[in-house]
Structures are given as structure tokens and as C-alpha cells.
Length: 123
Image (tube, rainbow, N blue to C red):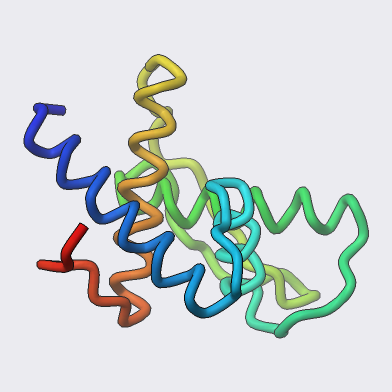
């Protein structure tokens, strides 16, 4: 990924965190956003989740985010209404920094699809 794209991602990431801070009163981290996406994708609203369910929500969100890159494909809901994904191709080996950047890029895309305007916002 070139430096221009990296700077664009960093700018949009900062704007996303600013907007979410305005909504929730605190700035979430990447793991918090992945959990939030998992809850959103489950579609059953806020509730108390067990530790295993929280891990499952994080997995759902990660699959959803990596589906933007073509690594996973949504296959439907299980009998309990939980989203199911199938791996299409394995992601390449990459550094933790590159993994973090890819996840942030896809979180940004997810929130833009949800109606967040992250373009042309002042820093």
C-alpha cells in the first residue's frame, strides 16, 4: 500500500473515531469496533453475551471485514440466526502493522456503508 493510501486511511480513521466519540462519549479502539460490528452483524441488538459469544462476535466481524478483501464469503445464518462465513482464500502473510492497517481500512469501509461520511472532513 502506498503512502498516499496510508495517509488517507489514517485521516479517515481519525475522523471515524471522532464521530464515534461524539456518539458514545468515548473513543473506541479497534477491538471495540470489531466487537460493535459483530453485534451489528448479528442483528439482535445489545444484550449480555457470554465470553464464548463475544469471541464468536469478534470472529463474525473479522469475517465480514475480510469479505471486503475477498477472503471470506457470507453463506447464510445458522439455526440460531448467527451469520456464517466460508473462507474463499487465505490472506497472505503480513506484518502486524499491515494487518492492523487492512482491518482499519475495512472498518472504515464498513462504517461508510452504514452511512458515516468520512470524506473531506477537517483533521
